[in-house]
Length: 418
Figure (cartoon, rainbow, N blue to C red):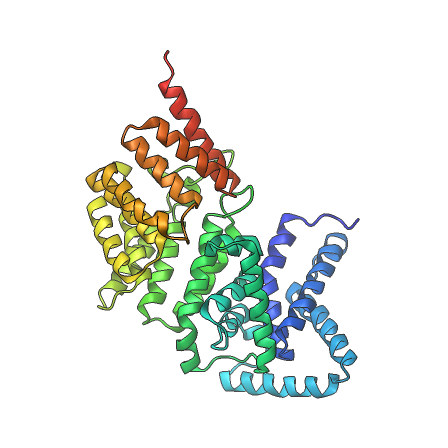
């Protein structure tokens, strides 16, 4: 058995994987084969590095090993010289055009992000493929993010790979026009990666810091290149403002702590100031998009020193605007919560009824969890317990399941006579 991979190596490999894949794809122009080669390089690293030590340049080590695998593949296809020459010429041409002299100067993860979001793919397929290639999410995690069955997502990712292979069009750095066309999908990918990192949909941990950090890093990179784009700035502000609460979201044992019960002295005030300044500057420019509205909602939450001081009427207004822009059922779910906080739980419960007919959310644990909370607010403890239990059965997140189960125990304890 190879030595166990320590946490540092594991995080390093996750961080380097999309960067290495970007280099190999750019050199050899075959996504499927490059992905296989990089996976082999990662496996080799996971076996050798714990035994021999991490190399001085781990990124270069992985690129070299993956490139060797690709060279073997090309040799077996009797086309090594032709493809390597063409790839080298293409890489040199792109590097000169971009004013870049070496691989080290590329942010290959960002390049890979734009390359995966190509017009040849549908937006949903591009997002799913990028979550795999850049975000490192598993198929079940992506399926949870899209609210679709795992088998459906596996087929979608497979079709995306086949579509790219069949197109015969090489991955290139996008020009200004292509970048604009792909930006919406790119932002949605970053949004989903951050959400999965901030609140993991599956497994024992509530948060996956590597994914959240990578989403923020990439969004900063996009914002650096497109500083005047309001939605890019809005998404970055949303991530910063949301991530500012990270330390307060879990207890000593990793248990989930809901927003209204968090110790707000643990919130990152420096990050909150940065996020508020960014969204305030962005909103002053005029045109407003969905990420900007979500960032504004996050700012209202973050600026409340206590949960009781939250400006729920303002949040309800912002969700109302967001609801007009999007038919996302999660927006309606959050709108219902805000409406309950302003007008009472009966109003919120009434709004939830429309979601029962929405196949994207019907039967989802979040709908059950919100219903449970609103029924508890209304004083119907037994119905609240039933929905908390239903939500606990449906969630794949262990911390969320434990939290929902704890709510049942708490209500039962409060109802028991002394």
